[in-house]
Image 1 (cartoon, rainbow over the protein chains, first blue to last red):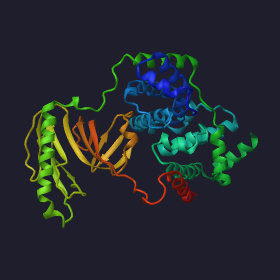
Image 2 (image 1 turned 30 degrees about the vertical axis):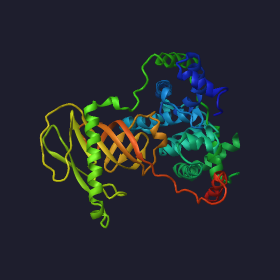
Image 3 (image 1 turned 180 degrees about the vertical axis):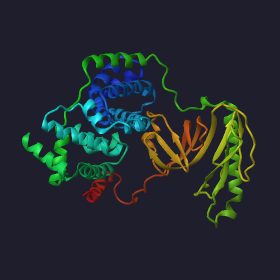
Length: 191
Length: 234
């Protein structure tokens, strides 16, 4: 998540309701936000809806946004994380009624090959983790953000982000189990 | 600082890195962009400001707070030697006339007994000390004023004592709020359950700051102290 060129100016212009600036901010961050949301929800449809909502809230909250040194993207990740969490709460009961097979067969976006199946299993295991754990793993290893950016996105100190990552990896390992990790190791050898 | 991972952790990390990168389709990007640009024409999200309550209520709240503080100051010498006791304040159930008691502790720092849960149904209505049930027949959402330290933050939900308050997901205060901060929240009890309410206005009245570093030598040693913290990282 590199800041956009002239990001500060773009934000100032967007705060003045400059449509071109808003469009540039949107274009600069939409795929990253969509990826983050998509990893955390069950379907493309939900991810698209929530991504749109993130940017609508961005626009509506721009007048109150203050540059405190954190990347603009960190603010967007925070909005997205909060929205996902609210969505998760409101749909928790409904999701619990779906069988795991329904979820994986119908909505998993990760292909059908044997190797892809291991990654799909990894993704399902990831989604079983607490929200903070999911976020730190997605931002660190999928979005490849450095610790300081992850920390700012999660409103934590860098040290807390490191500790959180350590615990999240442990939890994901426990979720996968020994056989799941072995399968990942084999899948890695095939890569 | 490079980090060493066990082979199992490394396999998980590699697996995460190898997950496919879902992309928002171009046509969806375009349609959402239109929606986002259109949102520019909407009024900005209501900031948590004083316009959400009638001025009369704010004046009453101000008087209440001032009175509480004066009473607290007057009682402080007597109470300083004893631990503050919880104050039982009442939130009245408008539908069934049954009082619902919520126990909250008092200001632990000042030792002042402050009313922490205030029902404001149009006019300010404060109930403290001995609970006496009074029926307030109204279907309007109940406005509450809650003051106290944040005991937990879970996404957009902030817990003060036994009350969970929902904040706006994009509210900037979420970025600065920490457990222990003392909040004053005006909120709406829109489902009749006084333990789950929605915030409409709030202010941080005390922030629990990290312990200040010893004010000895250099003034710009924050980065070096940060790296010292890394020693704890395994």
